Image (cartoon, rainbow, N blue to C red; front, side, top):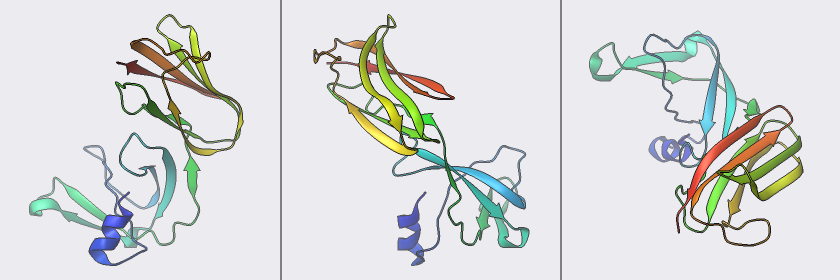
Length: 177
């Protein structure tokens, strides 16, 4: 989402400019459209799912270079209101590979029990980042490459696992000192 860029270019504070990709044979039509919003600066940031109601007479389409291959849609969706739906997702850590510390972002769609743990390649628990109740929303934590006893971890591949009541996700990261 590039709200600041749009405000700067057009002077409109209620306009959002989005870049969305459709499949080769897909067309944007009337109805509800589900968009996954990546906030801040790219796909390494927490994301949410937003449902946007699109009304046919509020869609306009232009084509790049006057052809029919690359459509650019303008949608006046009106007031989107509070229809943001959090998505449970574990993002890729950043930086990766890392030296010393790395940031892990994740989003939870529901409140409840959750855990975020780090394992070595043997499947042994290295560090429990968090285990307990959590609210829904987007979160960020930093791992300092130390185990649960405070000892520095060695170079290598590690896995971090987010577990919620209904979902488990695992990502790989590499520590290089």
